[in-house]
Amino acid sequence: MDAPTLLHRLARIVGEQHVLVEDAETAPYATDWRKRYFGRARAVVKPGSTEEVAAVVALCAETRTPIVPQGGNTSLCGAATPDTSGTQLIVNLSRMNRIRALDPVNNTVTVEAGCVLATLQEAADDAGRLFPLSLAAEGSCEIGGNLSTNAGGVQVLRYGNTRELVLGLEVVLPSGEVWDGLRGLRKDNTGYDLKHLFIGAEGTLGIITAAVLKLFPKPRAQATAVVALNDVRAALRLLTHIQERCGDRLTAFELMSRICIELVTRHIPGVQRPFDRDYAENVLLELSDTHAAGNVKEVLEAVLGEALEQDLIADAVVAASEGQAQKLWALRENLTEAQALDGKQVKHDVSVPISHIAEFIDAAQTALEREFPGVRVVNFGHVGDGNLHFNVAPPPGMDEAAFMQKMRTVNRIVHDATARFGGSISAEHGLGVYKRDEILRYKSPLEMEIMRSIKRAIDPLGIMNPGKVL
Ligand code: FAD
Ligand code: 2HG
Ligand code: ZN
Image 1 (tube, rainbow, N blue to C red):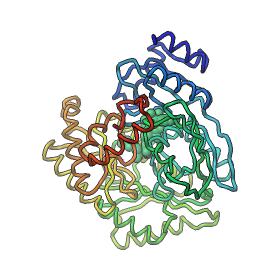
Image 2 (cartoon, rainbow, N blue to C red):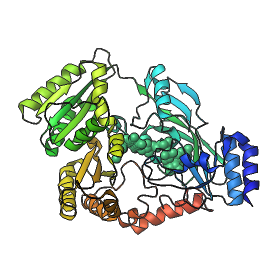
Image 3 (tube, protein in one colour):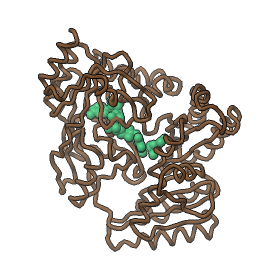
């Protein structure tokens, strides 16, 4: 089939105004958030309903047109970017943004894939509930993207990854058939739990069009602090100290090394250093309680006071108001933006068992320093989940482009150290294209073959997001 006929048929399905074809229009969709991958799309199509998605996919199956599903396009591993062939069709879900139903008794919300995460958080809040998924991209990432990457974020410690927040899915399969698995059940043992195949599949098995997600009671009391520490081992001892005393009232525990505070306060206007002097490590932590009279601030001050007495921590600032809490959160939430403004670095999104975090950091840092003396490690992340963003920037004075040429060496050092401590090379962002080849070194051939056979069974024509993950 030649291009005009395909485009004409797509326009008949979704309406001409929802098929973008000019390079100037498609380019923003064909470029990733970090501006590291520049693809070319045959077109960008924006369906407005599940039926339209199904008709688009059926047409793509008939014409063997490769599809790149896309939500908010905030992927950090090139997962939503087409290749440069100009043959791949971006199917962008942003128009499918309705909240279909909210059931406060069942504590569930049924939402379409194109709903922006922040919009869903607000809808839950308006209904007196919490949708706990929270990440710095929440103003633009969409539920379909969150599901397809099994996104993590800053409250996994208490509520789990996206996977743990899902009860049901609606998916358009690569054949164009619609699987209606929109069940709001917390218990359902009727064979294989198919939804888990599509969660975290990065669009390689089908297009998620809607989901039933869990809601939680809304916290009515919160306390936020940034704590200064002399090393990462102290941060890990602090984590245990607080968990033992506060249990699941601890809803965030985020590490930021000295260089992170330096970057974010230098690049982001209005963001201020939490302390008068710099410390090797800083932790942002938050306690939450559903009881309005919950004395979380007093509890936090008491446990931090104890930690100070035991020399676990060097200093602490506890937010006195919600405004101050937001200022503390700004230190953490702007880190990705601050790094982007600072220049290029090699990103890593690793996890190791929490008990091995310190050893991992020592091993990776030492090996990097040996290869690239003076290298700057911008290490931060969800230490309470064992997940570090161990990003590596060139040594001062080294040519950025020359350093980026060494990306494979940098990846090898960090990922080998991760593997040595029983870790994963992708804790949250996924494989995309960035880690597609890299994973072959760390997953067993058997695991890879099981993944390939699932792909063949569900997408025999290989049209769903080719070149990603596998
Ligand atoms: P996209 O980037 O559009 O797509 C991501 C993947 O999902 C692609 O493979 C795409 O093909 C697929 N996809 C999208 N929609 C669908 C669908 N409906 N059906 C099937 N496949 C689909 N990630 C974290 O996990 N934790 C963080 O804390 C975090 N912080 C971030 C902060 C910033 C500033 C930025 C820029 C990114 C951050 N990310 C984080 C990464 C990113 O935001 C997440 O991966 C997010 O879940 C992607 O959502 P999206 O809608 O932008 O998806
Ligand atoms: C975060 O935790 C994100 O802020 C992004 O996962 C991490 O910028 C990064 O490397
Ligand atoms: Zn993260």
